[in-house]
Picture 1 (cartoon, rainbow, N blue to C red):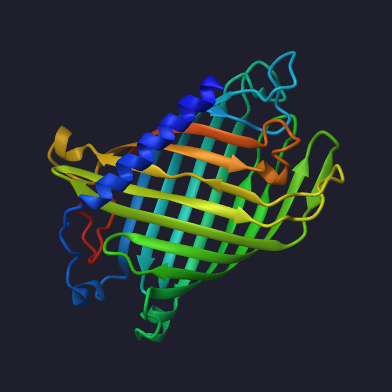
Picture 2: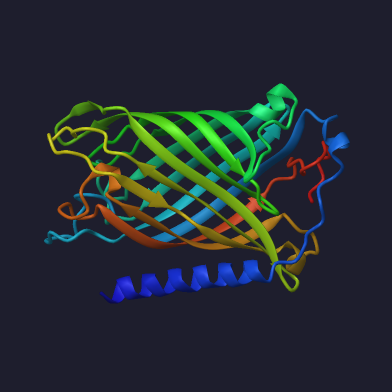
Length: 319
């Protein structure tokens, strides 16, 4: 109970800060003229490295020693992320490596499980492909058509090997700064269950995937509120014959740009505070399966690499 109260307090502070900060937002410099942007093969690109830590992850059927309660799993992570906007659309590649502590042991024993995870998304813009502003109407800025995949494996006793594909439209909303996109995807997942040694082919389902990044300022502090959420409909029965349930995961973050404080250059290094909430993890019932409902605070450091291209031009200089 004490841990849940601490987590709830962390989340409340984070959201209150982000909301109050947005209300006090100040105008940032506008991107370069659109005519200059058309001359560049990529309108925007950013490559970033992340290191992170979360103390209270949970995984279904990973128990505390001698108990039927879910274990609190600490994980450290390293991550590379590339995003770009080019002549016809947008791309994302996110590759991470997550290392658990001994609360989630590897099959070899002695150390925690190691989990590589990769996310890929690529979308075509209706406005860019047609060279019109036909989809710039009402609350919409544009409409995309997206194809993507999630790939994962882990050397734990369950030995998961996720292979999931996504396909569908992406609604791109108008916001004063940054972006707010909502993907509406067909979703199909294949996986592996190591306890029974079975390969799993789940029923196709539906996915709703909001992603957002909203920069704002509070006095001289440059901040960004970003994150994602995924809602996945039930995907049939798992390898044990149990029905899966609607799955929801979200990971919002509040970032502070440390560059102006450390060396006078923005968009170089940022510190982030966030949380991950995951209900019905992997489609398991949070009501009956220990570890299928997760809430952990997250702490991350982000470093933007020098090859990043700012919005509105092909220069390799940082913003």
